[in-house]
Image (cartoon, rainbow, N blue to C red; front, side, top):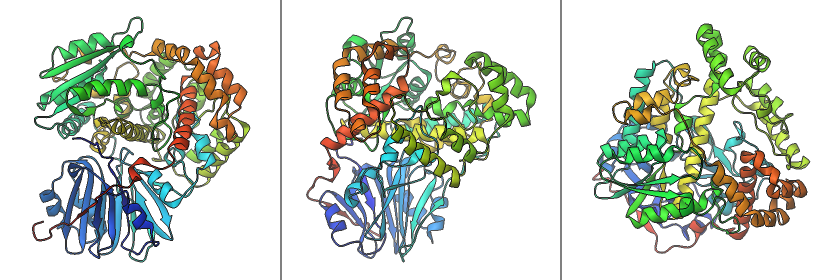
Length: 622
């Protein structure tokens, strides 16, 4: 599998679009698939193995991405489709990470994945609704401008709440919420419908672990190709190590990447070496901190911007360095354990509902979290005994953007509350406060249960991160997949009783149970998690001059979203080393993204490509 050519698409309804719109897109599109009417349906570029097509009469169905379906299988499934309402039932059992597009008797149906690893966006082009897998594609084609409020929101840490987290950076380009699909009728009427709903959280640990093992095993097998080298991160942590053993079980020829951080007492390298010694057909590569570029290397280097700002900036140079080494050994795809934490460990918000259902179990769990997280008794009791509605929680968050939630730790009712760094301007605060208040007026939670909502949102954050990681790594020539973020894997995790998977004194018990008998017990018994703190601080010291240059020429300051002097002090002062990592990385991520966008205003994947290939699906053989 090789994404040397960027994989992207735009989907059109079966209507006449604004004159010149499709023609303009056709300049960069390598591949074109038409509706039965002959009008463009899908335009873009994709490797052959990333597109499965089927057609029967006036019905067409496409699965774009990594999936378990085949042309023969998809054609058989298409026979069950009479209207767009039949599509999801026909696709039941197809697993992987993919988009779905359908053209059924003039109706357009398109959706991404349930948790955001495959995202979908929509915009209006001359009164016609079009959608794409990249917001930047639509922004470029519709000449949309940046939305200052959405840019400002990306300064918040640890992450944005629903629905702000789904918003694109451009006014007029909207995200289709994960788990929902876009439908466009022949008359042009467009609306979204729910295609995925979370399963009940009722299974005991053993049963849910069995489902997780099956789903994760299938997700990894899907990425193994006979005769091809598969790269994988092998950090020594449980997530990446589990993927490596699953890949080895599937017969993969593995080349692994282990980073040996310069941290006193670091145990990752011990567990990684222990695992590598017990894997078959593996070539382990070990990179010490001295072997790798320092954290934040490349702050002054511009490159093709991603869909949105991200926290990948810190390790971008390191990811590229290790990717080059993995590619040199023949790897065409890399597996990452990203999303494992989000998938298998529910946030402590589940305590709210547990207190009403099982007070004794809730008391034991609360005492454990209270001791581990140093929660105060008053904050714990106040939060657990009085759970606000989600709209009320959003409205309250709008008034507390400068408050650091870490100063008063306790159970988070609907997930972490967003906070802005001290250098955010009053304008930024006003913009985000207004956005939160608007959301409070018309937003329902992802689930009425606060714990369920928080876990779903946490999983969506993992999905969004997986999408950005795949995009960034594919741009460098070695795409990275995150099997933990596949819909089937995350759905399996949601079936477990949260208090069994989120026990405060057990480390990832759901994944431990799922991998029992496959991953060595020595690794499954691990209860520690290492960090790269010394490398992080060293990177800041090493690049202090570049940080000062960023502060002096800040794009964020130029558009009024940060106080330039306060930002400068934070970036170059020794006091920086006492904390503030998420806030700093978010700010640098937004700043770098704005600079990249200024340097590369036109998406590289829309650069004219010739010749294009028009797909014709043989209805007689499918």
